[in-house]
Length: 71
Image (cartoon, rainbow, N blue to C red; front, side, top):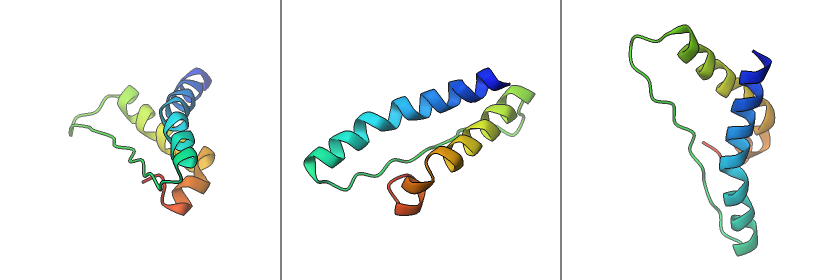
């Protein structure tokens, strides 16, 4: 379970960091949207990925969520 959490955290961080840095350099307000696609039948792994992603974003990117940079 801890490995999944670290994977999700690393993935989110890897996807957001370059764009946030470019936005700061250019003085532009950039927005990032985290989208989770799913079907109505979800396996335990799908549910775990959804939960871990949500927890990670809320814990590690609270500032970006609050400022509206991350949606």
